[in-house]
Image 1 (tube, rainbow, N blue to C red):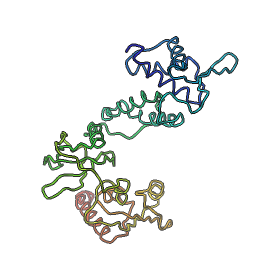
Image 2 (image 1 turned 90 degrees about the vertical axis):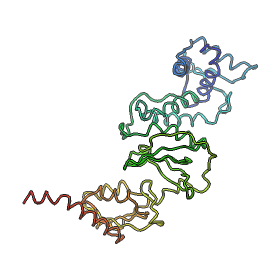
Image 3 (image 1 turned 180 degrees about the horizontal axis):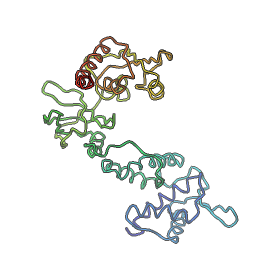
Length: 342
């Protein structure tokens, strides 16, 4: 890209530096920051002379009339900054302080880079870096739990784009039983739970439309549906999952119930420090009993079973009986182990 064609990008980067009163940018700092962005965009780089020309052009009354001032410090050192703290040559949405916060966000997002299933993040991160002239820290400070073998995460970019742009989708879905069906879904929300991603949207049906959730690892194919988009006018997704664990809204339990769980000495501190649900309260610390206010679903049941013999369901009675019955079925499966021991 010729130098004159990336001038606006250079000016945007320099503008951010001159607006940032938290740091002193010397001329070689400006050169390094500009070249890092340019190199990522098209592999080009500019000279120190070009940066000086850019500063002169930005100061010119016929262009931006930017109040760029050179401040001397530590003897012969010199840094550049706007003399007017609120000045900018662009109508930027973010202040210098907000860009500093954005840099931290980019640092966080960049931890996902290099993972094939998160390739959709590349465009997002690159656009943020170019748009605001910020780069992530190269040190590997944060790690995330990630399942590289999980299918469907490559669909995330398209699904998010479709939800934002209100594009209905033909979704070909395969159940664990092997049954396949293609339906029209109007995408509203994407949610992650237990290292799986789910699409929540309005599914068109023969007997009416209804809200559904589809696991991305069970989606075989996506394509754009040639129908008008039906917008979400009823659901606040900040509230939608409030009374459940996971993503399944149980039709048989339309209202939250009180669930009392008793833990053993070893497990109780972990459950207190890492609550099962936002509604969790400690009812009796001595007896190690906690209370949840949730709509019981299969995810709650799975969570209870994950604690094995370290938990006892006290309430409601129907859930206690249901868990007890399933434990009896588990014992039957292991009855041969008891016979072998005898």
